[in-house]
Amino acid sequence: MESLVNPHVLEVTPYAPGKPVEDIQREFGLAKVVKLASNENMLPIPENVRRAITDELSQVHCYPDSDNHYLRRRIAEYNGVDLANVIVGAGSVEIIQMLIRAFLKPGQKVLTSEKTFSLYRSATTEIAGAAAFVEAPMDRELRFDLEAIAGRVDAATKIIFITNPNNPTGTVLPAAAIRAFIDRIPDDRIVVLDNAYQEYVDHPEDYVTGIGEIGHRRNLVVLRTFSKVYGLAGLRVGYALAHPEFIAILNRVKPPFNVTRIGQRAALASLDNDDFKDGSVRLNRANKAGLFPRLLGLGLRAIPSQANFILFFPGVDVPELNRRLLRRGVIIRPMAGFGIPDAMRVTVGTQEENDFFVAALEAALAEMKK
Ligand SMILES: Cc1ncc(COP(=O)(O)O)c(C=O)c1O
Image (cartoon, rainbow, N blue to C red; front, side, top):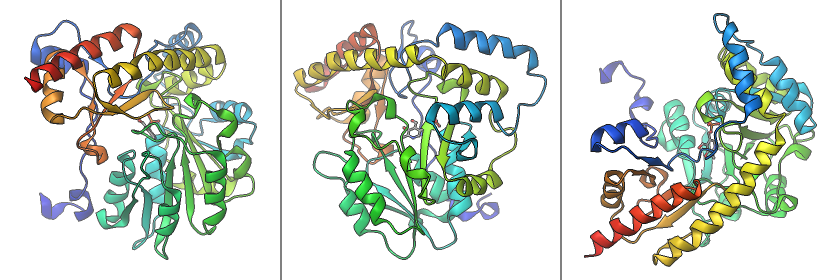
């Protein structure tokens, strides 16, 4: 088989998602399993989105609108940009893949930080091989080090991913630093602001959404998603905002009918419900403020986060701790795949979920330290 395959594909490490609840229930014979592994919204979708979904069911024998027209129009209106500035994908992951397919030429490189979203690497590797992916070190507070990234831009660098807030560290860069970085990058390189967790930031007044920049910067693209604060991870809808010429290129590689009818309708309805979004942000903030000191209280190093998850260093063998947590019905995420083998990431849950997680963590750590 290997001789048949594009050799770059053999270099890709498959994405390791959080384990499904059903798998752990079956494997360990557990009735209760709490999954805090994929940075999903802890709340079920609101009533208006549910209604939009059920309403659309009568149409699913027909293909969706391939152009995502009504959703794009609403996204444009919501963000104060033009229809031509918007493209919609089956999750922002699909747009990351489109970007790399459309813009990365043979011999060119993708640049980002270490300790960030692992999909940038696999999406690059499958097209251009592992050598085309370059990571700069982080600063000591586990933030993107924009100096270090800028210092690694060379003639072959084509696409630069800046993840803000970053997954999995939850760290955010101030507006002035991002703006200065964008100004520094030559306009024949592409800067991607992956703003998947934008809604959660603590200081929106000191945050670059990128919307003010895309009008005059043809090399800047902003990624957003409905998977996090909007609670639609299971429907796979994300979008990009960029200059119309940039969007037109992405459209050349966009798979037809890439977003389902139900995904389009649900995303559209969710933009009509800022109360749900704002309530989700408030609840996340409160529950995170409850969870964070409990991790510190267990003697662990945890990184202050402006997103809906917390990265922590348990100080014991992570694969072993993970097995013990799974046996207790807790699914969180070991971070080896994100380049931090001694860390784990927990999504902020409801208070009850957080309690269940902390109790399991405490018990598992106590066993391991015996
Ligand atoms: C930084 C970042 N970008 C993009 C995504 C992809 O989200 P989706 O494809 O669900 O829109 C994620 C998901 O975890 C993420 O953490």
